[in-house]
Length: 509
Image 1 (cartoon, rainbow, N blue to C red):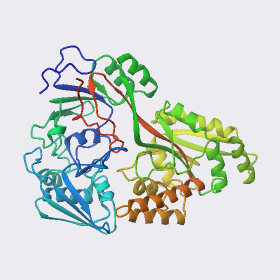
Image 2 (cartoon, rainbow, N blue to C red; image 1 turned 90 degrees about the vertical axis):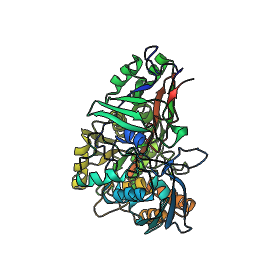
Image 3 (cartoon, rainbow, N blue to C red; image 1 turned 135 degrees about the vertical axis):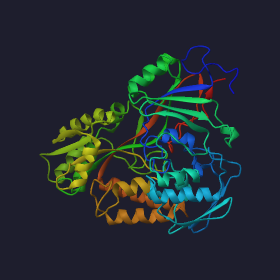
């Protein structure tokens, strides 16, 4: 397959170029493509395919066809019709048809880890072998839903039937996808080996490697050592502070791109003094945003425009930002009756190294305006449970690292993070604003039929969010990688943050 190609990465001259070796931090919590809702998406995205792939920001077209070769929606956004490509097969040899797609989506709606993305779906039918019709209860962007990293993989009906009677069916590494690779072997916590699927339908994206041998390497420093020593050809996770050094040592380039990862900090708006928007605005003005990006993200990030990450709908640079202005912060605190300051508690996830680096900067900045911050590092699960238990006894400030489930941060980030609810799931600012709720709700019903109108409503909601400041909008982290000179690697796609598409990776000419 690769005769005549030079050895990839830092490996020894003459190495087997039919094998790509990788150090990846992604753990496998499940091999079930329906229930998957974590970092195993890195592997599943090479084994399974959705109906559509969402292209990165700036691409000529918003989508690339996957299992669906064409699609259309009714004017009211309530009916979506997908034409299923002919000639694709599952790894078990069965052909892909409309009934298989229907079964996959019904399984996802029933019990996927991200089943909520299919909430608009009222019914689905397969009138013939190549046509799938989705009928919605309300207008929704089913092109974005069908392109999700989670809950949208098309799975062999035989495997769906087997897993229905045995919920551990997939866990040995059994796969049932249509993608460019199959799972050759899996050693829990240690290794995933993928093998090229000979009958893959997409010749243009067919694998350039027979085998992708992935060492599960959660420690970024270890991954760096493996890459620089030539033990692996590629590492997906390197220490940000060492990126330039690694690139220099390898004679390689550093690549940056949008990512869907976003840092923010909730204010507990249920009790004084943070129940006063003027106090929240003052604290927002106190934050050293540029320093936080430099220290927390080693400079690889951009200041947030609200909680929607750059490159993901409905991001807009027209949404205003705060900048550090300590005089304005002090003036606002004085107007609010807090010239002498006050004490607050802040919690962050102890396992998040970026948060551990930048949180002290917030503490120091607040001290300059008379606010004393008691900083507490907690395991995220502990932080989460404490915040959800009772707002009256919860933290004052909760630092959050978040990303949308699929490429609609209006339906996810804007709704999940700040829409009011009697029993908030992710809205741990506990903020309740009827005007904001109405704008987000209306935008959500427009996204499937009039995306420009939805964008305008979402932007209005984000301006209100920034003005009322139930949270501090810190920065959008960039995806950073070192591209070895011996490899040609496709650009990062912010819509699939955990999925490295090994098919476009090839030895450099």
